[in-house]
Image (cartoon, rainbow, N blue to C red; front, side):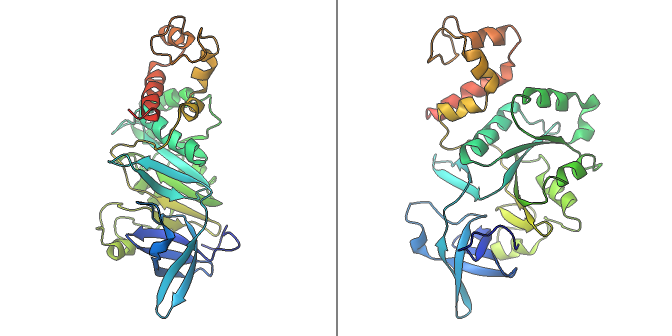
Length: 304
């Protein structure tokens, strides 16, 4: 992957399994390496896919000697509420949401969007399974819901191929990470974008010891001469880590607009008198689902 390396780095992390990792060297060669334990002093911190590093060869063994500061990160909250970095240094993140079977709730989209904005990764919304969306009704509803954002939205079907070419034309430079809940079609999309690729049977599975039939770790895949696609594990649930009230409001520009007319500056739009946001929701000017997502993300931001 001979693109966009920082001048001092000579490798990028392709995938990680414990302290071991696979690297793409600046030369284009792929090698296995071990990360020095001294690199990460904070408990729980480790290498992640996308990290830029300096690797040196010692005999037959490559060692990661240095990790450079991450320009962007995508972070979730772990089961013990710990910080888990899923990947770093992506140029964009594709937020995949299925229109049916299963139907992705807008609350889930909002959580992924919060993580992207908070981590400095430009988001792209990708609506999948248009072949199951009768009259494109659901796709229009979601597109209208997020019209307030400067957020590219693509609709496609991995079954028919409709819309895939349009998305592919935007992915020719840099690293594009794919995230979403289980079953939204990430693996099918990658198989569409990279002809001949079968992610269910791949060499990396045997190397990592994670099995061959599911995506169990993030993986960086070459895509043309100047780009790469990043596959990530499907998640049953996702909670963004470290969001604040200020970062939450960035995801809801329509709520921020109505909030300007609230009586109180610190109105939380729950039950306060003369709340313009609640009035907008009651009058149908604001989608009730968006207000519920806003309240839930505020709870996450406050540690509830």
